[in-house]
Image (cartoon, helix red, strand yellow):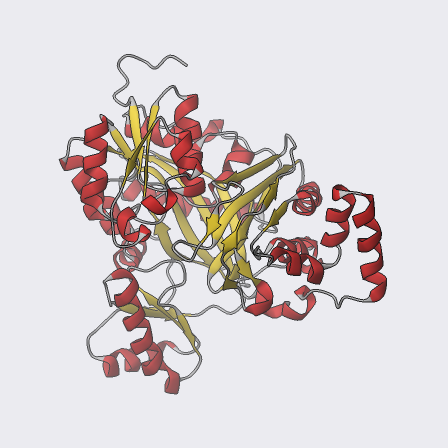
Amino acid sequence: MIVDPDFPIRKVLIANRGEIACRVIRSLRAMGLGSVAVHHAAEAGALHVRMADQAVELFGDTPVAAHLDAAQIIAAATTTGADAIHPGYGFLSENADFARAVADAGLIFIGPSADSIGLMGDKISSREFAQAHGVPVAPSVMPTDDLDEFARQAAQIGFPLLIKASAGGGGKGMSIVRDADGLIPAARLAASEAQRYFNDGRIYAELYVERPRHIEVQILGDGENGAIHLHERECSIQRRFQKIVEEAPSAALPPELAAEICAAAVRLAQAASYRNAGTVEFILAPDGRFYFLEMNTRLQVEHPVTEMISGLDLVAAQVNIAAGRGLPIRQDQLRRDGHAIECRICAEDPERDFMPETGRIRLLRVPQAPWLRFESGLTEGEAVTSDFDPMLAKLVVHGTSRQQAIERTLEALRGLTLLGVTTNIDYLARVIDSQAFRAGDLHTGFVAQHAQALAPAPMTDDALAPVLVAAALGFREFRQAVFDVPELHAAIGSWRN
């Protein structure tokens, strides 16, 4: 593709790593734009480094510290002649000071303005803003240094309550409190955890909705009060407050309610003069009431399911909006095609409370199909360490219907081989194949409620026999047979040497 000579962006530094860096590089390449990768010495041979046109090493005591060094990243962008920085998700993606520093350096930040990040990226200020613009929020208690007063106000709302970190994410600084006796200890623990992870000890409490569904809306804004939604996503399958399965559209949301939630998200984005991609998240109660949860002022991990049903490249849309080219589509032009499901492939052991795992990728075989995307930065021989988040990849499937998307997801999971580290691949298949998931009976407590049903079946001699026979026949049959005996697959997955 030949880039428009007036286009202000020619080269982009990706201030991230792994699968999201690879994902951004692919879109930049399709747009005819150059790319710059950053990396710590521990990941010098990573896929995103090899994919990029240029690469710069970052220095730090740990790999994470290197990726959080805003000054080094901005210096790398200016040194390599990059015009813009794409933050991906995580790390510095929702850091208002970083966005401001990028702009002050004369670079384009491919994301919202620093002011928008400061307003909407803070859970407390965003809640107040949402309420002021007619978007419903759950009854809550704002932070105070006086924990006794905090507890008194919280008790007036009633129990259960959800304690949350104002600047948090990823389930950090969150806990459910079901009675007054547990409130102050939980608040102290949440504040301590929030300070440790986010350098911001502010917490708040809100009414905890039992058996809620997690519904979110992908929005795009032009920064001039123009905003559109790209439909909703269902993200209710979670463990430890972190998503592991997402789908679009929602599994069983009445069209009228979906339209109301999407309209609320657009109204919020317009009121904030929001620019670029963002996600407005809601909690949906069993009685149909919904409440604003938070706004993620960045591209979400689960954005591919929206791309699959909308046909839009969200990274390309981000770049074009940042370059001043406006929204890629009008709301009345938006179409929705079929259903998409994403499974997060993580290095963790579901049979040990999803404890993170480490190892080395010994074998990686990914099924191929026109309806399948496998988003990862993995290569065989790569070490999986505790330095980064345990998510290794995303398996994303599209179907003409939810039923077809489910069957295709199962087919893809059964065809995916990743050996050398224990993963949740088999567990995800059991979730997708469960009666409750197929029926769309979803809520954020799904994993805990169905723990027994989602456990692997005991291995018997009768189950082991076909595996031994298949081993004699060849790799493909062996792989399928192993998949049908989860304990054996898990044992092989934990193989290290």
